[in-house]
Amino acid sequence: MKTKYAKVASPVSKPRVNVVTLGCSKNIHDSEVLMGQLKGNQMEVVHEASNIRANDIVVINTCGFIDNAKQESIDTILQYSELKDQGKVNKVIVTGCLSERYKPELEAEIPNVDAYFGTNDLPELLSTIGADYRHELLGERLLTTPSHFSYFKIAEGCNRPCSFCAIPLMRGKHVSKSIDDLVKEAKFLASNGTKELILIAQDLTYYGLDIYGKRNLADLMRHLSDVDGIEWIRLQYAYPSGFPMDILDAMNERANICNYLDMPLQHISDNMLKSMRRGTSKQKQIDLVNQIRDKVPDIALRTTLICGYPGETEQDFDEMLEWVETSRFDRLGCFTYSHEEKTHAHSLVDDVAEEVKESRVEQIMEVQQGISFEKNQDKIGNSYKVLIDRVDGDYFIGRTEYDSPEVDNEVVLNAKDNYARIGDFVHVQIDRAEDFDLYGTIIK
Image: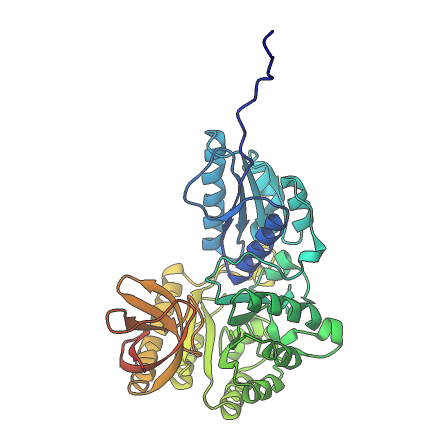
């Protein structure tokens, strides 16, 4: 008598979640939290995988800030929707700012997406994928950046009334995380090799007002500075109105708080600042920059400007151009104005031609290029502590404390003459300099 065996079906592989991130560093942080939750649910998760699988669940974390970013997000949704129609991926889920802002329109225009979620819908998104939101995973993330640095979000949303900005529509009101929770997150990151925390929020300087009744960024900085393993703390996205000067005291007190500040000022003309609802004036901004430099003479200041805001005259622009020439910011970015629905400025006439906007940006950046070149020339012969970010061909690429990833200067080291490892701090003497890059040699 033959023994009968049940027929064993071929194993079916579990679905993999492929997270695609668009937009700013805050979206990078949110994707990392999502991926940490998925990993905590024993799910296979990858970030922007190049090898597409038929059983993939693709989660697209979108940006909805300005026209170019919105178009990139829409194009990406359409790309993966088409792959789904072709049977090359299993599901497509959309989250993030674009989905928060335009969910009804997206559902109508791209209906073959399986689900749309907003910026604060993580538990619901996880449930759709078959995962549970695990509160005990507080602060645990799957980094998409090199492990030695991490974007560190200390608050969500914004209470500022800036006329051009749609962020409050997508992210809501300002909500600070507690110091205790942030210290726990920093300790987790440090235990996994993170050496640099890049503090981000829509407005760092508002931190603590909602939960502590006062601006408490300086206190947070000191607590994070005490975390073993954290060698650099960097501040991005400070707001000029109501700027808490005590954060500069913390910067001076603590060696591991970088002499670096990213403070988008947007414009200098009083006409523009008033229409932009920035809550400040030309003289107040000039005085603030001078006070910051007086208090921390070695500080690197980065700012961001907008060209072509409604009603910007040649006189307004010339005033800004002259101010850029005299202020000599260490780092500067400049963007054309984007006319965004439901913002206060949308009621104004977008009356500056696109080619004029672009010409003004080019003029600002040409001036800044010269300033950057001159400042970099002054660094030749000096030595700096440099964090190695990556290897690019025959070169190690790193940064000083005066430079943030992706947007600022880099230090280039010839790998034939220098040896370092990614994530190492090394001391480098600068041998030569260009507009936005420094070239040096590791000091033995």
